[in-house]
Length: 122
Image (tube, rainbow, N blue to C red; front, side, top):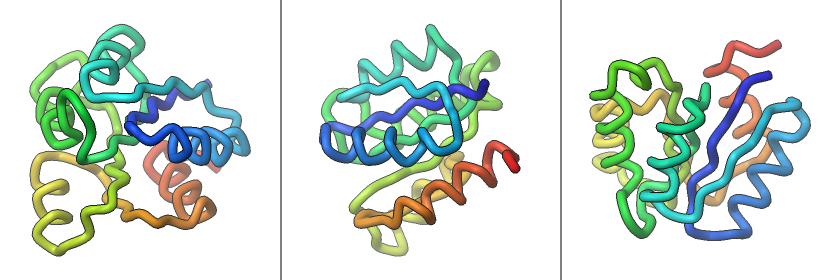
């Protein structure tokens, strides 16, 4: 079973994403800030991290950099899920190593499709 970490400081977003991912039968971990997310990523080594860019503690961009610099975690797939939707924000997220960039508000079905693609699920 694939493991996914959802890191967002908004509880309602975490709940919506977790409910969306339940359809794909994924093992879901949740973090309410960047520091908690980093601890869970190092401990559980999820297959995918869905990260908010702007959250307390480490930001999503800082987490992407940390994941990509760690040999043991570098193959973790990453989707940034965020309200920052300017072209420069998207470019910054992808340039630090995110696999996908999804903006809020988002379609749960579209997010599920992105997750299926990055995890190569049927």
